[in-house]
Image 1: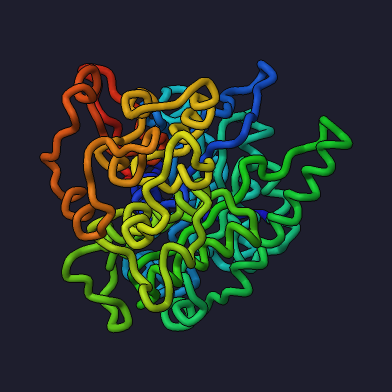
Image 2 (image 1 turned 60 degrees about the horizontal axis):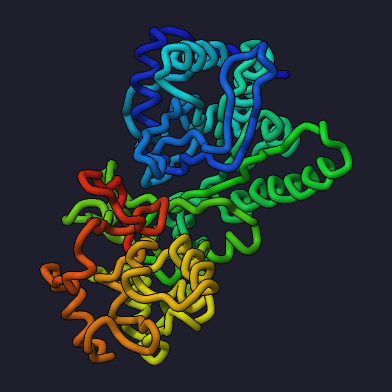
Length: 448
């Protein structure tokens, strides 16, 4: 184990101010899917509900301490605020300082876990060793059983990455930019091969660990919540089709839990970077998240949503609605007989609603009132479905007609379907359940 000699000129709270601010551009911060218990002697736990720097389906804010170990970096990536050529305040934690912060904030109920990333201090091995020491002390000396998400450093010794993986709940390796050409232009010290190598290592070790757990129930768990990655969107001229195709490939080949999309924020003056007079491409980021949801839960492929001839998403309609408008030959869908896979493709019907429909129609035929009770967003779905062979009211299956009506926000449903509930857009976490009287919609609307 390395003997670390980290200068401690700055007070810990000043380091925290610098290194928490430096971590704000890393959005790969999620944590569902693990159940780390507590033997009653330690502090903290990690439940299936997840601990993430986000909002849960019930609107609850779940928080992590999200910091960099250091913002010192030997690399000079053109898009990064912490690049070596920038004259900014620098700071580096010690492992004990991070452990003290985590325990102090946890005891005060400020946080429920840790998200730890880092710049590259001296070498990838040196940095990864420091992060391993931090997690080792946190788990063994401080007996912290809460959620930990840690970055694997590309180029680090595989032994260090493996040792760290046994202490973390989730690991991630940032892909940074969608294409190898983008890396060559903006991050020449990084290569696609170096980034994918630890990603493949984590995947292979997770598969081996699953087999070990079948044979030995008490075997240590390796990265039980899986791995994720992040891509910066808008720093290079890559199309949405290229980005989504890369994400689809990562899901298939590396079994990633999540791909995160981070709208490029121009923090450096550099001729190689886009000016972005309209600010960060947040709507584009939003459309990619919606499309990502369709890849993972709705059975779509990247080639169905986009193509080389049509490489970018429609900024007016969400990807699912846009696909439906371009493929009206599949509609209308008869709710009482259509297969589950086709019902999922109807705008306004989410995964939970589709499952409810399949289950309920075994007991009898469904009508539009039944669909509303199941959480179907009829203001969107009514143009694409029939119940018992009939539409809700006379409509034309024409792209222009349906598009104009979907954009007409003051459209009313028949009176018999208006009472007793209000509608909201689908959220990132559920499928558009109806709100009871007086209930407020949750954050992060997603039109899938």
